[in-house]
Length: 274
Length: 120
Image (cartoon, rainbow over all chains, first blue to last red; front, side, top):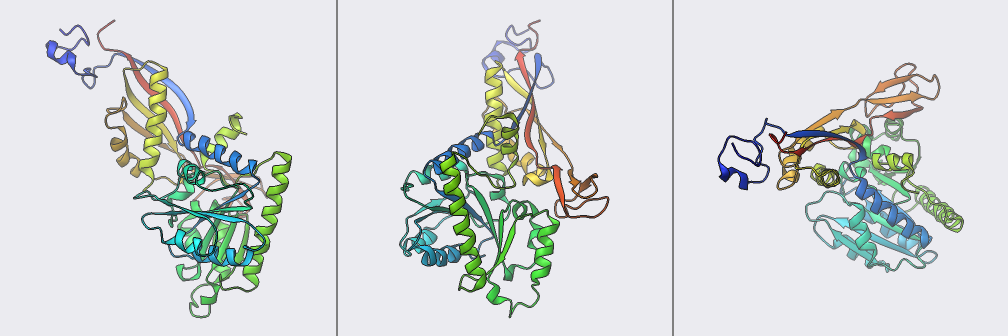
C-alpha cells in the first residue's frame, strides 16, 4: 500500500497531487463561512465610493437594455448642464469606443471600458477607469453600464445611485420581465416618450404598475432626451442629488443605492464597511 | 452570463478558506442563492467547473441551496412568499411590502480534507 495516501496503488501514484481516489476520504473538516460571494468586488466598490466622496463627486450608474437611450440622454444632459456642472463619463461597452467618442464630442472627459465578452462592469474595472479621470472639481461621474438588463444588477461599483432606463419601444412589461434590475433603481426613467404617439401599445399606467409590483419604491420620470417637461424634471433631480452629495461630503457621510447586491447588506450587518 | 464571474469570485473565496485552514483539497462547497440575487443556480453549476479547473477546488462538488423570496407587509405585517416580479403581500395583496429574503448570494460552508486518507 502506498505510504503517502494509503491507496492500494504502487509508488508511482504518490507523485500525483490529490492522489486520494474519489470516495476514499481522509480527515474531513467543515468550515462555516457565511460570506458574500462577491465580497472582494464589494470591498473595491466601497473603496471607489470613498474616493468619490473624498472629491465630493456624485457617482451615478446607468443601466438599461442596449438601445434604450443611455448615451443620447447623457449627450443631452451634458449640453444642458455643461455650463453649470463639471461632468465626466465612464463608458462600458463590449467592443467599440463609439459611445466615449460621442461623449467627448460634447466636450467632457470620457473613459471607455471595453469589456470584451464581459456582460457587466465590476468595481475593479471602474476603479481602473477612474484612475484615468481627473476627479478633482467634478460634480457628476456618470457610469454608463453595459447595455444588459440582467448582469449589471449584481455588481456594486461604488455608485451613490442607480438609474434604470425603460424606453417606450421595449414595452411596458419590461420591469416584470427583469425584476432584479428594475428593483435596484433609485430613479426609473421611461425614455423616448416622443414615440408614445406611434407606439400606442405602450401604456404609462401599466409601466408604473409593473414597477410597483416588483417593489420599486423610487421616483419615476417620463422623458424624451429631445427636451420638454420630463427632461427638465430629470435635470432638477440631478441638481438635487448633486447638492445632497456635496452636503454629505461636507459631513463625511456617504450614500448607497436603496437596494444593495447581497454582499453590501452582509457587510453593513457585520460592520465590515462604513 | 455573469455567472462565470460570480464563480471566479467564489473560487477566490474558497481558495482563501482552504489556505487559512491548511486544506489538502476542497471536498464540497455550499452556497445559498436567492431569486433576487440576479444569478441562475443552473448557470452557476455549468460555469463552476470552468472556474474551478486547476484550483484546489477542482474536484469539489458544488451544492447550491435556493431560498424563496419572502416579503413583510407594511400594512398587515404578514410575512409571506412572493414571486420576483410580484413583490406584493400574499395575505392582503398590498404592494407596500419589504423584501426579507431572496437576495442572498452567500458562501455558506466549505468542506475540506486536511489529512490524507489512511494516516490514522
